[in-house]
Length: 401
Length: 164
Image (cartoon, rainbow over all chains, first blue to last red; front, top):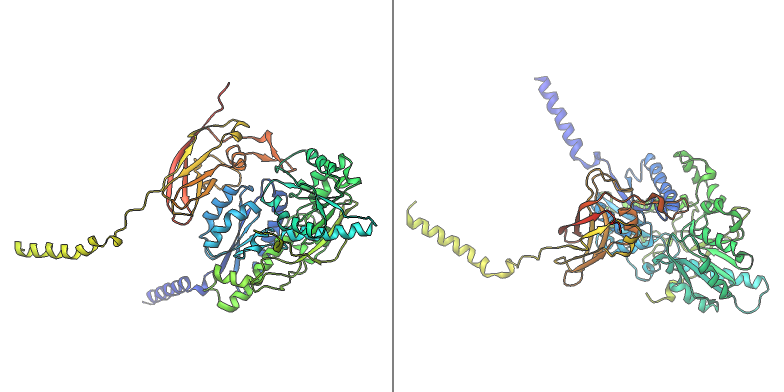
């Protein structure tokens, strides 16, 4: 009789433990539509390592009020068709809240689906999503804002060098949605500031030799050249410019994606003097940050081998952590869904992410991850800061989307 | 049961069903079946020639404005980098128009990454030495609607390069 009673009590206990949600794992899902093995893997792999490691660390500390984050990374190989297919496969994951589309073309393709599913989607820097406010949020200032900040920088540089008249600017990047984005508003900003833009040069991703494009820009008598592409592409463009002797007379700039430690290790001489506009910490600024210890803690290797983009990934995770804190406080775990997290992302204005980038600028009228950029320069094979954080101009509003 | 009772039951049943039959809104015409077709139906796995051959999927009967995803169903044993065993791999997509017709083309990246399973060099350019075409044969193609969940299938044959 006693055995039967014990059995019944045990069964009741198991039933309660199984059906009461409080006893089940409380978890939300973060989906990365990534590229781990193709064109932008060089930066995406370390960036997602940063995101995954920060999430691991957060989960090991109990998550956010007991809610853990499940990280799903899918290798789309920078292929839009794979990105869309992968999104469709994972869209029904339990409590999927945030989808990070690592590349601009994938981001644009997935946006209508994530919008219908009422999720938050992250994209690199498309101004289009600032112009048309929705559920798509950029990681930092938009590409056109960074380009505009560079125009300001080069004008100051021109003046500092005692030059008269106005400088002429060249632009070279991938022939892709990403490659053209900085000029959608950036071109208007340059014109507004009186800087003449030479006809831009676009080349297919994967191009080995960029001399044809660079020669055309040189013939256009440009004083500065802004180089797009994901590292090592910008490194290779400047390598070719160096071979042509152009780096002696033309000041080269890069956007967020080059050159990182990946490029500076490949061609330090060619890159010497290159100026980088960045919304996240670069070089030793990144490696000396206290959070960089996660790189070694999770067995990624020596700290000197840490690519700076590792910190971007941490910032993605920190933003989600901040949103979860607010959302859980306001609605609790049960009611937490994509709509709630979308509303919450708009309340993150001013949230700090340990100084890895500027304060969060998300708001009901802003989809910028932050406003600030910092200028760095390649000196002696190292990427060193040459400015403090500077608020980037709004170039998105100058373009008709 | 006598015949009178039977008549009453049949009659009552008819009376019950009549309003449903009369009200056409309760019986909308069946949705057109989603379809997918591919042109050409046979593709030579020749590089770089394949980059010049458009592989185009078209379809009808999809929900207007929905995204249609086209996946290549991988037979067991065929491995593709970035794809877990048992998963299909996306090779094209397209948005259905107002009439429910869609068109999607296999992009060059999918031809390289999926059909030729290319590796990338340390400087992140496709490495021609690593070209490793998928096995020849007839593959199932699965098109699915992101909103409607509709599904249509067809086949696409990959053949070995023809010696000229």
